[in-house]
Image 1 (cartoon, helix red, strand yellow):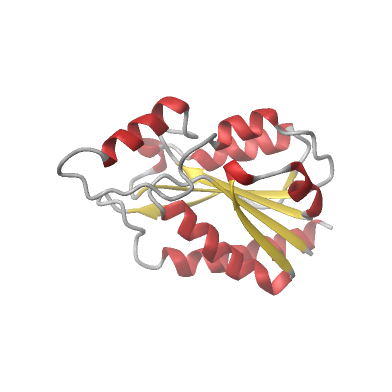
Image 2 (cartoon, helix red, strand yellow):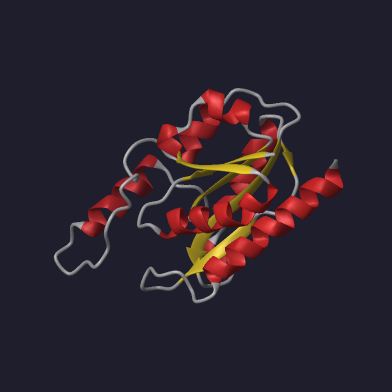
Length: 177
């Protein structure tokens, strides 16, 4: 089985989760982890499972305005934030908008968000899953959130949980066939 993990990451947390998901998906076959700005249609065609994730901004997926704000936050004199090397370019919202239909392919969605109730933070993964369904994907697992502290670090144990979630997605995928 071929798994494609597509991610958008501003400060590196979603990138790290994507890498950990890849480790979990490797038990099921070949895996490619690709920043959203580098995804080509051939990669989606190659994949049996497409896993898509990004950071939660303003209760949902990033926008050009929220990405600009994230970039500007790194330039403040007292900021300890650094941009992920792949942060430039289009976000998931734009990529999903222009995506070709992928009828019959299986998918899953994840996000990173601040460690607070989802009612307060929102969840980008729900919007991602919705758009994947609109493009003909069969979403095989509930959207998942991985938590980040207010200091912008992954909460302890989230990388381990990412590997475990990947295994549960593989199980759900097998059950849906």
